[in-house]
Image (tube, rainbow, N blue to C red):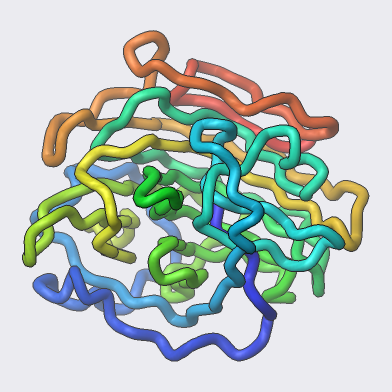
Length: 306
């Protein structure tokens, strides 16, 4: 998940998704979430979206870097004293996650792949207003580059700093260091959204990673950063719960269902279900008060309060 914002104040100006400029701009989103799953892979027929607001995040001090491979999520450690955490400087070590407020509920791949996708149920959670609490259901691709973890993630989130008790479609890419919200896609408790993060060639060479949302019977390109690693990366599918250390305690999270999780080995290749043992996978540690229920390891499951 993305690092917490520096403040809940004025967001940065919104810029277009540069790497998706070859696509037509998406028309205003329909008023309700899709009721049918995707009928085509991302690519032909896609349009380009732009965030409605962007909130900057705070970087983590370099002294907080943890060795690669020690935990499931990229570079998010809350500094001592419960100040907002920040991002992209190493993998968070598992022993520190619970103390720092993070609960990562789900799974991550042992090997590298070119795409990940899932259908994520939206739920109205007990995130506390005017806090750094958040809940996010998302997929992510991440890799280490020059000693730093870089990643792209997409899904939905409910954030205490927005102070609106609402859920939002969002992306975060560690190169820009911003939370990007897409409020043209209204989501509410019980809705289901399908998202994909996949790699593909960049116009200038190298690799572009793209985050798509299925809406209005087409793929909407949310973000397309050129990340500093190649076309394959470690993948995650998580429901992430953050408890603001300054508030402590616990808050309720109704069961969030994740279904239809898929991966693709090669850019543009066929997607297959994220299933054990074909996709070697590790799962999150146990956390007090929050649990994962596996219906099918690992493409159908749910997580929340237990």
